[in-house]
Structures are given as C-alpha cells and as structure tokens.
Image 1: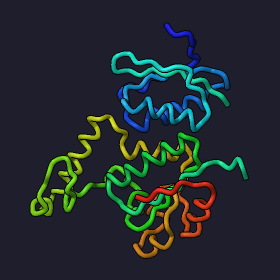
Image 2: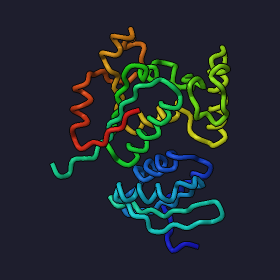
Image 3: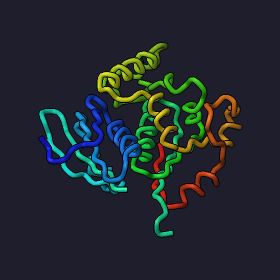
Length: 79
Length: 157
C-alpha cells in the first residue's frame, strides 16, 4: 500500500518511449492542481524520463517504486 | 522576456521511415515537456506531410550498413528489397510496441506541434498545398528562423 491515494491511475504497461510521457502529460492536463496521478510503465527508460519530465514541467514526483518489471510513479500536479 | 517558454525547433529533410520516426518521437516528447514545438519539413522531408503517406514511408537497405540484418549492397539494390527491409523494420517496431508514425503524427497535432512545409521546396518538387495533410502551415526560412530565434533548441534530421 502506498501513502499516496491516487486521484487518477494511468497504466502505460507495454508502451515504448515516448508514449508513457505523452500519456502522462495528457492525463495531468485533465487533472486539478494538487491531485495525484499514479502512472504505471514497463518501459525501462521510464524512470529517467519521468524524472526529466517532472524537472522540466515542474510537477512533483512524490514517489516511485519498482514491482518486478513495472515502474510505478506517483506524480502530484503542481500547477 | 524572462519567462519565455522554451521552444523546440526541428528540421526534417528526409522522407524515410526512420528519419520521420526520430523526428516525431522528439517532437511529441518536446510538446509533452511543455516546449513550444515546430517541425520544418523541407526537400524530401515534405514526403512525410503528403496525404496518405505517413504510414507508407520506407527505409532503404541500400548503402545502409547499420541495418540489424546485414544486406550487401549488391542484394539491397534488387527490386523489392526496400519493401522487404521496411516490412522487417515495421515488424521489429511492432514487436517493441513502438507507436506507429500515424499515431505519432496524430499525437503531435493533438499536442499542438506546429508543422511547417517549406514553400520553396514545394515549388522545386512540384508539391501543392492540397497534396499535403490539413493543418500544415507553409513558410520559408525566415518563418522557421523567427520561431527558432526565441529560446529554442534546434535539431536537424
């Protein structure tokens, strides 16, 4: 269990770069400031890419974890 | 302007599957990173913008020493080899669950990527506005450079 309750969950399992980032951007665009997105990806490049994406866009990566081949990210919409 | 939005200005000069793919991966990723993104298509790059072409672009095995399956030039020059190499490449891309060019183009437009066709190249290559997909802007070198002169990273493919 995570300490963050996601408002929206987005499963990008199986999708390759750059789709997880694009779908994350679209999901965040549809959310309210302060809400949390849980994003799941299997693309091995998604960890550095999500970190780069939040650093550029200013949203907050609250937490990330790895479960087998799945990367799970909790991102808070900051603006 | 201190808060001017970062821009991504891409030039695409080639109408092959691999080059168009790299172009659209970077363009969509740039837009997803909230960069104001424009792609300027000139010369063979215009092929990418022609109606009905996006999913029909090819990759040539001729003089291409980096194909994952090595094909000698003397074989690569035979009729049908470009189609075969393209089919092979598409099957690898499908297996890796990479988006198709058509999907990437749709995504680019949805994210507001500006697509600019080089007017002079259209003239040279006999391409008319109605040959191109909807939503393409037509412009010259100054159009692209004016866009790129504001806080842009520029990439050329």
